[in-house]
Length: 378
Image (cartoon, rainbow, N blue to C red; front, top):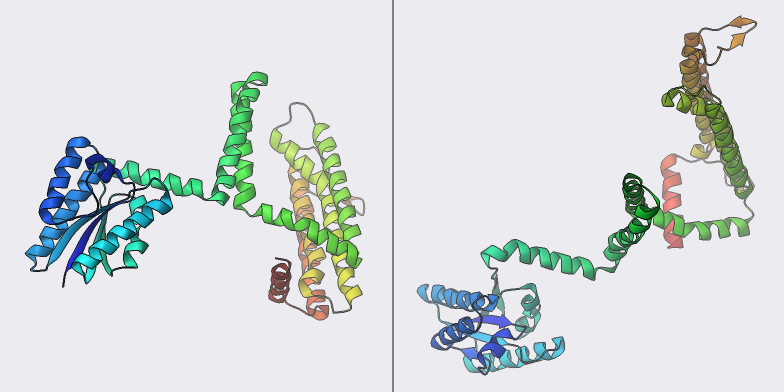
């Protein structure tokens, strides 16, 4: 039984360079073909593929195994025509030598695409890909880039943001300084990559459907979410006013703390309002109140107390705010911080107790239910 060592040339460069009818089979015929192809273009990778085919056939012969070396080269410029011509040449070789197996030698990923055509006619024991040592990294990079450009999702994720950035860069250089232009483009690219990498695009795509379902279902949370958004804007507005009212020479960190001190109560009220709306939806459905939704308002209030306590402590240390007074007695900054921390812990414990007594479902159950709902939407 014979092993057929096949050098595959899907691009047809060997056949066009030598003007020899294909397929070519036999040791002497292939060795002569190597000389003709090498004299025509010594830099062609196909020459190395032919030499590798001869080497593989020689090694099989040294192992006392009958082998035939052959070359198939496409005779058409189109992909379908090239594959059909290679298939016809393979049929000719199979009829002549009746091989039991084949060893396919290729020099590129394009030639390797013919492998299913070969396997449909003779079992393939091995695939030997030849890459010129000096060009290995370059060729691998080329095919990686080619596969990358063929992926539509990767193109839209990477190439589109970079293209937009390159289009905006000249305009930014014209209107702004070089540093501001580069910073703006870098921020744009970072935001685009995070938008796609964190899956925010999927969340945004599902927002219209969720809003439509909420409106049609008559959920109270729609109104409370709008109210929460308004309260958040109010909190941000008052926080900016408070930070801008400080002395011009105040450190930036102090301005941030002042913003947090003024805005956190409004943010907390906004969060509690949104959470209460979700609780009302649970009550309206009359399916019991799920534990995580019942505990959420208390968690928001507890966190807000702790954050405002620390912000008030730092501002009191800087003598920007006076400590609170209890029954006419002023508290020290440390006492004020301790009172807020204890208040946050107490509110959190109250929430845990109420949620455990009244709640009907665990957090894992809520997550599973949300996943099932998202799966039905998709």
